[in-house]
Amino acid sequence: MRYKSYSDYLRTRYGEKVYKLPVSIPVTCPNRDGTCGAQGCVFCGEIGAGYENLPDTMSVNEQIDANIAHIAPKYKANKFIAYFQNFSNTYLPPAKLLYYLRQAHRPEVVGIALATRPDCIHDRYLEELAEFRAATGMDITIELGLQSVNVHTLQKINRGHTLAEYLDAVLRIKRYNMDVCTHLILNLPWDTMTDTIESAKIMSALGVEQVKLHALYIVKGTVMADWYQQGQISLISKDEYVERVVIFLEHLQSEIVIQRLIGRAPETSTLFSNWQTGWWKIRDDIDRLMVERDTWQGKRCDYLNGKAVRKFLLQDEA
Image (tube, rainbow, N blue to C red; front, top):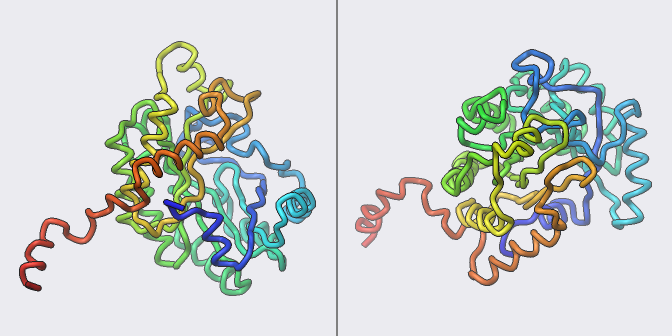
């Protein structure tokens, strides 16, 4: 493997296959309810990102039971991570968050992943999460949606925060020794290869533990769908996306875990998704290009820790 895959990481950490179970709770987003915006991100549909989620009218325990019944025999998994996925899962009072997390404290659930926004991270919440982790022994990963490091792109997509809030969130989470997984979309219409490289460099400089890469899909009924249908935006080719992923990996520090190289969304909900190609085919194209170039994650990660002054240190050693 030419990059550090999530499946390998989980198997090493827990000694066997571990599978993430999507969980929904009744939350929304501060970019939808008027706190920092009312329209949401321009690419986000009414149901958010939870295309495979069960309804939040089911309890957390009921959702976990149903998912295990479906997934355990199919994937031969005995350990699981409860993935609180949809919308902003720290956008509720701390006591309510802990109420839902406690329902996921089960012998077969070894960890919790919380998807949220950078502006929904606060020390009080992190203190509560750290106490919950200490009491249960469960690993906690905070999955932060950033999407782009380009502040102008963040404004275009109506993200409701800039890079500063993301930096603040990561630094705060790290004080509590929790893992950070950052979500990035590598083919937003306003971003270039320069932004792709800068994304990898910022992830590496911050020392985030995991990244999850996405290709943009155009969800029906969104602002971005209107732009797409009106010809106001254009998307890069599949080959260019593959190229960006490879270059991103080359510039990314070698110990950062890659949760995903490309996402997926149902065709019935989208105008455009993965160039109408199976996500696994694109993943295979990425693997193939890395082999052809004999390249690997971290190959170009030579920019940290004072690159310009290394020559003086080499002279001293000589």
